[in-house]
Length: 469
Image (cartoon, rainbow, N blue to C red):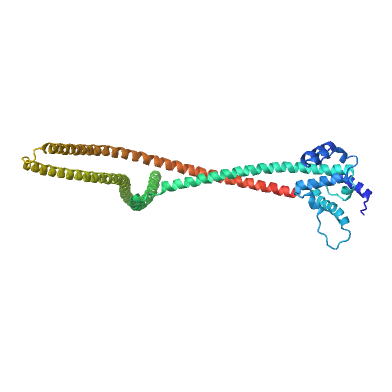
């Protein structure tokens, strides 16, 4: 039914020797396929005699089917299933050829991955020892490579899962830290009005200080311009002095050399006097401007000192406002306690008045009924004694209330100290939380960069594996 060219097969086998993978020994090939591919009775019955010297076609075909099952999850039963028409003559012949042709097609698609490019039907129906050894060694090399890459991918997956767990833990910690920061940063409604008032006062103070600083800067600029003018004028004066000195030297030299007429000397002397007067006038004007500028500089320095004093006073006012607000809260609490204690004292005084009235009424009744009811005196005396005991208890309660007031005042002082300590600790905790938040942000950015690098490396490895497959 099938015809094969043996010469062509030998040429293909010769070409197979020029391959890029090592050719393993038969014992190593048998041991590998027993342990890695075959299972159960197939692994026990697979031996060296199935490959050399005369390979068995059935065993090798079954081995190829198991390799395809391992690599592509393609079961051996699927090779025996083929869509055939209903009105087909001699279906037995087609049933015999379908698994072989299906296996041949699958192996032609799989073996180029193993760098075996000249697979033919003769290798399935009439296998030869050298050719089967080369094919199996190529498959073995590919399965070794596949196993290593699967281990590497499993390691990358475990690392990625661990990184994802760390990321989830970090995100949870960040969310908790953000919630804590929100709690610490939110101002309670009781203090919002005071905070708004303080903010408004601060804005007013800042605006005033900005205006004053602008004025001071303008004054400083004017002072700098005046200093520049003074420096320029002083340079001009020094140059003029040098010119005068040089002119004097030249005049002395000329006098020694030339005898001039007295009229020319007088004219020159008058010109020199006028120039000297002009220089003196300019010098006086420069001195006046210097004095004015010095006065302006002193005024500016005084203004700066006054501004600093005002800023200190504003800071003191802020501190005093905070203290007064705290004291107001404490005073309100104490007033509430004092009112409750006064209510209790009023209730006790009313009870005392009622008891006194009852005693007076009972004493009147006793004085009227002494003659008639002498036998009931003892009972009434006992009742009076009980009332007196209650009166003593009321006095004891009053003393206890006074002691309570004293303890409450002590507790208020201790509570003030504790509140101050708690505020200090809250400020410290807020600073620590801000530092931890900044560290977490930096670590998250680094972690995201590492994750991106890992994902890029994993995608590059997967692309390489795809290209290899």
